[in-house]
Length: 229
Image (cartoon, rainbow, N blue to C red):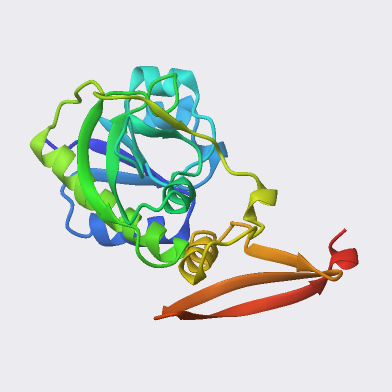
């Protein structure tokens, strides 16, 4: 029997991947892209078996996640890396690979039982990484739905990440070219503050970094610090 499911995501690539995924899907699928549409009345009308959350930073009403199986995707090997800014916190710590963890939403952030994990590369710009993560999430969605995977409690030491602040985008005391490259690429995505330095009254913002051996090239936007205030 056909079942109803919802995918929630606020990025354009989430919708693109959803459209590709649902072309061959047999169940009924709905996509929600704004927080106003994610309310109990709308969800009750659809009556989904699962609600999958991709790139989403808004609080979900308790009435929804207590009534329905809400599944989130987090870019760490949970319980390692619970909390905010996982992509940036991993790269700044030197990680090259991670896992995407699909877990059941509960009241405590990133603390719910795990449905599935998949290994994932952190190569490329933040934008490229987020797009690849969205693609992999739909592979995981299909597996969860088709195999009816039950969630299992998280195991291991809990390590918490803090959400990074805008001022932390400033490049300070870089160790080498590679670390500068990592700093620029981990912030190079839609909606993120660019990596920057301030010098002699000017602000230099960097993106589109490319590493080639012992040198790096990047785009730079230069503005007066007075104009930014």
